[in-house]
Image (cartoon, rainbow, N blue to C red; front, side, top):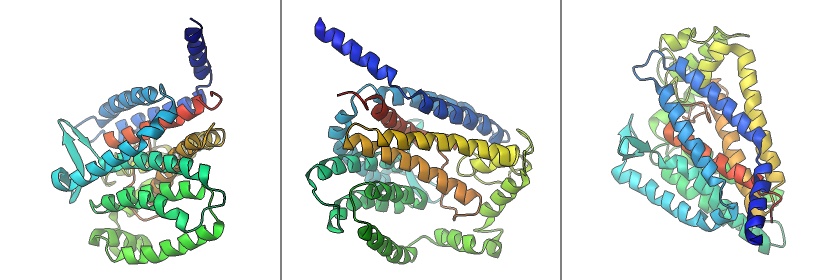
Length: 372
């Protein structure tokens, strides 16, 4: 009887620690995202915003289920999940669906799973488990040799994703891994050395990119050079963002969206739709919501009760930060167009699933930060 009372008290304590501010930020972004999708897809045959709302609802339930178990249980499951995702990434090459020249999806009935999205969570969990184990026995900061295993865990799925090809998701996976590595015990001269190696490696990798990927990078450096070809996406996106001016044209009044000048307007370029219809003020408010969510993630990481929880929170926060930064950077012309979705705003089942899985882990760490 005493054990039952203790368990009930513990569960109530965990509910008291539920980070409602994170849930509110997520809910607001989701509502804005569905509302914006309703405008972005009004000229399409299928109401994708309805599908997105259902997917978000199911993914939110999944995130809450993730919070029911102590996050230390996921430390034991991290390697199994990582291995399963690697298998799925290999299966894509043999059984994957080809869409617009890229083989990224595995069909499960009416649902198409994109394993590269799950790879983000797999890398976060695997690295969190490794750093927890490695930091406990490490007495001095990490040198170059100490980065081999975490970089290997990051680059293996990233290379498989790059071969699909999916440059944007591969870059996000690498950015997550590098961010988590920097937050571990590592010498700053090692960070500088890795940065130099990355520059050299990036120069080498450029020669192995697909022709259209090279074109996108070249059009970023000279947008007007191929305005009707590789630079078309970026040019139309910047026109949409700029035409919103201060207050925007109003919901459903975006001409770039309505006349279908804006490509991939419900996925990669969803922020352009929002900026055109709600202007600088609306864009700033959306960015503040993202800042609220990311700042909350940083706070949760700083108050985690153990190293595994700390690195889980760091990884999930890094995923949200880099996806937001790269997506908004590419639609405003600050970064090349590489095909990265905006979390909780862009349409896509696998993308929503991966984000909510990450949010479930983040909430889990927050709920147990004071529980032994």
